[in-house]
Length: 182
Picture 1 (tube, one colour):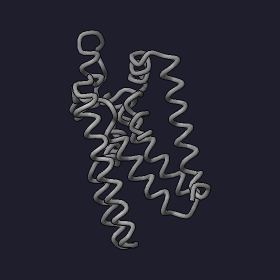
Picture 2: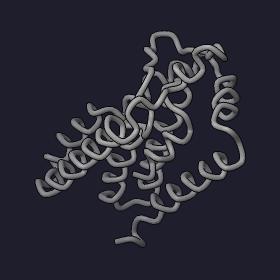
Picture 3: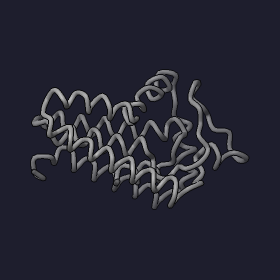
Picture 4: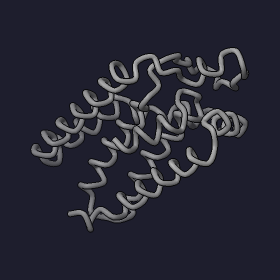
């Protein structure tokens, strides 16, 4: 089972290790401010909507689609969704409650560029729930599909959701890496 999913698992491992290396080498504010300067109107629109692939609605749509494949997949998927919800909720609202998001962190020091139509949240940044959901949801799908290209595509979807959270200034890199790890 493990060797069949290397086209998802190895990129995830590289994603997490690369993120950790960046976090060791650079302060989180430097990483975020640097990334905040890389933007375009087309990327604004893309990431504004792509981030929803890490939302609870994505779990619902995938869960419904799995009902047409195999019922036992739905049960496994529901367990993954529940564990994702509970672990992320516990960490965000109990263990790391009040952790500032970029908009709060830079409130009096740096004027973040904001994507139009995106409401910036202030607190409970760690870990990124969208990223955790994306890696759980699309990782589950990656374990079901047979083609290597689709497994890698599921990684790209999850990683892009994670990056979208940084791009939209909803999370820091450390939040996204923790979300991918969960």
